[in-house]
Length: 353
Image (cartoon, rainbow, N blue to C red; front, side, top):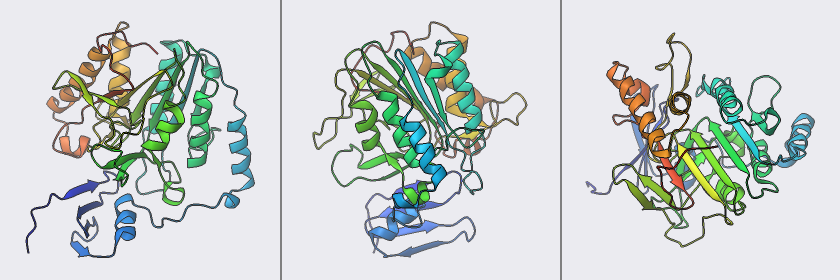
């Protein structure tokens, strides 16, 4: 019997696995077999396949190695700096089939931007990455580092959270998402430890912001959308702020501060790790990160409006240069940088970190 219900299609652009969810029926495609298989194995199996997690079992804290415990303790002992501080996370997922090649490059370029253009002291910037001597971007490390970012925040502080890696979305059953889905970021160990969902990110780095404190989150990941769960989203077509308050009525704002998020794409879109913008055609980097840096480096007096416009125009220019749209963005529509905020503000004001 045919059904008129809308089918939600979720795809990871790295492993090319796609899951279609229609009520109780889960249909999954496989790159290897090229065939579709349907079954009724229940919600647990459905979620595991949708999120590419082999088990919903969370890692036991006692299973941490001594090195992991030592690293976690070092992060907990990071001292919060006054004025400006930043947390930069680049997850490469080394030795995995969904490995990303440009995230560490993205992190280093973002660090340069913060230091050279926005005068962040190098000592106020912490990096989580799989390269060099940086702490690895595991779930626990990211969670602790996010706490450091907002610890003892005070009037005049400028905070930055940057993430380059995979993002996914999962069903929300508590009526606190307008579209019915939680957005997530994927730590290095997300297959065993789980993902970090937007609700947790909001609780950790949005709610604690005090009056006079500004946070910018720059998220280069799939399904990043309003990843901070902020109550206002700017509609570029409508040219006005749109209501993103949760239907449940739960509070998603700050404690007086201002949180702003710039995401690679809308919550139902996929971002890209591409060499399309490289002069040599070899260096992989996040499309969103590249266009973000380019807009700021070319104009010292950029506004939020001109920043979004410049990023979108560069993506359009890439298309005109005959780069494969499917290879670059993995969907037939262009990714659109998304601006969200804890409060409405004039997007023609200067962009300052």
